[in-house]
Length: 587
Image (cartoon, rainbow, N blue to C red; front, side, top):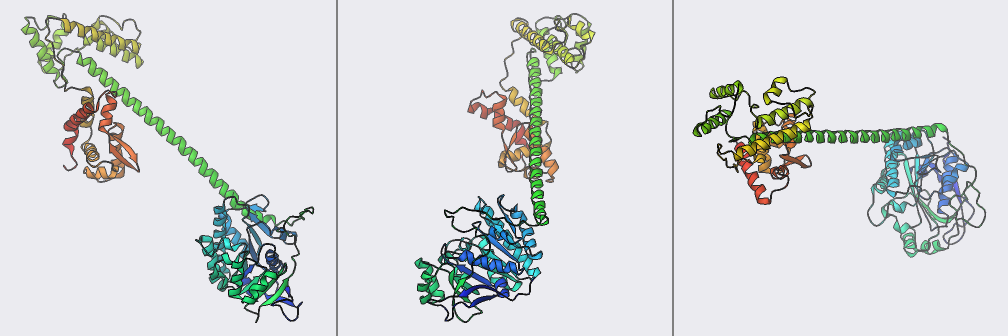
């Protein structure tokens, strides 16, 4: 870094408020410039951006570090003469950056003394630009505390970040912080604006040096009058392009000066009718760009990894949904099989789900004795006698499939089941029924049809037989109630108490339900028991990790939605009386 103590940026000029001897050089102390607080203002076309560029060129000529926040994309012309890193949001920059690059940008600027143009003009989303600038300012302030190296942050259109009225965002707060506390760490700041009335006065009044180019709007000239003097407020309206009043802490009076013309390409000049020719711009070291590209590549790799993980998660979620559907289908098939079995058994004369097999056989014999028939009058052969003997001993019939009726139906169904499992009913079963499965070859569908036909024939025979008492249907033995009550009774005590908890408390978490049911609150045990209730359809997930009681919906579903509200309520209440109420969580 050069040992320059002053840089020359302008000459004194004549006119109202000017020096007695125009043409004298105006020198600025480098340390005050780099570490202090400055403000450059003037209406559009008055020369304020030229003044900022002249200051930047003089600092770059002497190897001093700076970072320019370019809001209009007008400073890239400095690359005509200087190796300066141009970063921003489009392909015109040396590299496109985001907030993830903020730390590296600050590190290059302060630690490696790389001059940088942070071009936020190309960000379509203003919030992205503000976030990037906020992070860069934070990183500069943090690193400056350790680096202790004179460095200048130059911010264009600062009224957008530190407004006089309205709320101030995080970036504005950070710039104010740099203005108040950056000097002790060697970090200076210069704000540039065409509307001084819109810039926060707390910033302007703390500045060490101020440059006032031509201003014509009444509110802006009033600011000049308050800070300089009313005489300057009138004279500032008549300043020429590039001419300004300069007020500094290191000079005794306000000077009227004419700033030098910038030497590099003026990218901020208003387009005219002349042909536009962009100069050849210097490129920066590939090493500098590669360091920032590494961050971009890491960010892209992270985003790709996140995308892959999301896709993998979606696949797993889909697979879980498929497995749950398959599990539900299996449960439905099991329930259908149980209902079919109940239907077959229900056609047997005098069958009652509440009676044991021994009671059924006793009623069967008593009915035949009352009618004057022998117990074995309807059957021939040793197999029937053996069944009666077993019945007398309190056991179940030895051959419930013999003698037609339900036996035929069961044999036909068993034959179909054996075929489905790749086997065949053994010969003794076939001979006991007196036939094979109607020539079906073990087809389960045909076996099922044969079983149903046998049941229907047997039911017809029994209903028309004068020897058999007519049995009245039992209204209480509703298969839906029986099925659900049986499933609940088969559950563990704590699981049933968890169901009672959901019924009494409404939506709750498995852990709370498990604890209330007398469990330890162990997560694995709680969710295992909760899963049993959910898969049976007794509870359902209602969001935010909570589950709720749904017995009435289950009754409606298993009744094929044929119940009206009163019927559904009556069945659900019956289930609750028989299976749920007896397991209160208060027990």
